[in-house]
Image (tube, rainbow, N blue to C red; front, side):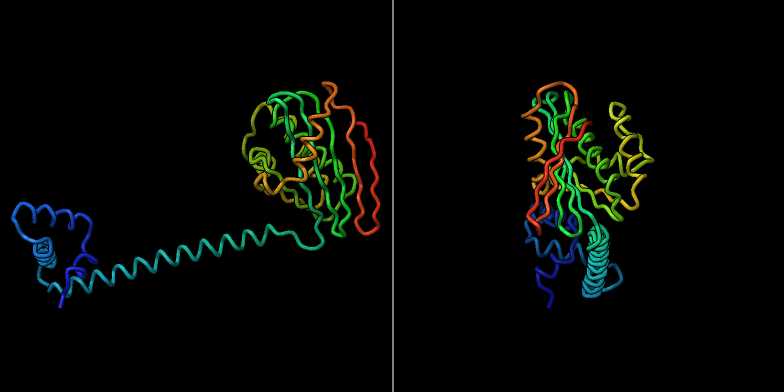
Length: 245
């Protein structure tokens, strides 16, 4: 026996609205008006055949939706797996800050070798806005990487603008940053294998802390030195070197 719930389950939204309107106008129950409407929709077939047909269509539509979701999930999982560095990759994080914005800039970066040796970069960067500071932080990191020449380098930053501009040579970059973008891409071409990935700020705390520290210590308006700290966690060695910019 067909119940009101069965009818509601296969009725389209417009049919439900029409049946409610008819119930009010004719003084009938919504179940009666909905059943009459669906019987009219069924035409030469029975109401039971219409219900079965729509149920099958709904199952097929849901199966297609599930398949698309599964396909998207698999593509996302593959993308994330491809972005994960292997054990031979060097890892790097960069960040730039400006106080106020625009104002005194500080840049920070962290470079970690596969064995765990860590290089930290922290320096004043003159006057500018956050985007310029982000570019200068990336450039300082790439300059250090170019000196080391790692076989593989995975770089992470929380600036979507800089990551997108440097990763996609085909897209036009923002005019104010053209020189910085060109410099960064030239440095990347000096390296063997580089990936750039955006991460949320909460996952970029080490580089952010270095850039904030540098911004607070800015004394002049030009970039004079960058302080590079080398840390070997296995040997307990920490060395700070001041490099001219």
